[in-house]
Figure 1: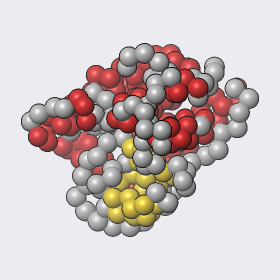
Figure 2 (figure 1 turned 30 degrees about the vertical axis):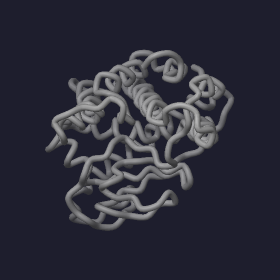
Figure 3 (figure 1 turned 180 degrees about the horizontal axis):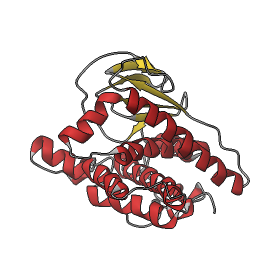
Figure 4 (figure 1 turned 180 degrees about the vertical axis):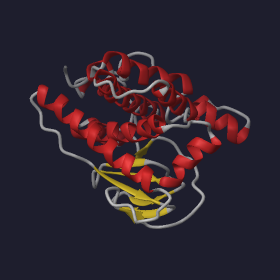
Length: 257
């Protein structure tokens, strides 16, 4: 199994880069609080079950990427997970409900607002533990992009003034969706999936499509402002990763997406 596209493929697009913070979407959480260690939720914490689950999923995702990197003769370096309610600080600036779940390449940490998962389930109808796992797997996908140099090359292009930054952002996000699907494929191979799990992930991917979110918030859709991809695109690229289990299939930088 190979690591995906050569970094030179990005240059073919002629598109400048994105912001340092790359995330799944912007959804609002409803309360404030501090960051917490995902491995040690406080006793009596209503989110303790979710924290324990995300800690397990984080280890599982990164164990699988370690194997993938090793088979390609590379070394995987682990990301850290910061869970918070409302607001915390990161090396990329403030992490808040406005930013939503995101990966910061400067400190190699994933920041997840626990309130996001409530909104994902209650407001956007994406319920279930595999929907939650998809969110984390997507953000680790950005970490993989960072380790492979994709994010660095994109940032280097940012100063060139060539192309449309939104288009490159969409391609990066869709590749992260595909990488999430690659991990999902491993869970299928290991008989960890239960009936309905794949549908939960696809529902979550659809829920955070630019067209779905714009339509729900304003009643109109403007493709020129898309930064993450449509619901259909996000589901499609997750399925590419899930069906193939091959990161090399996650080439969102060549041709149409």
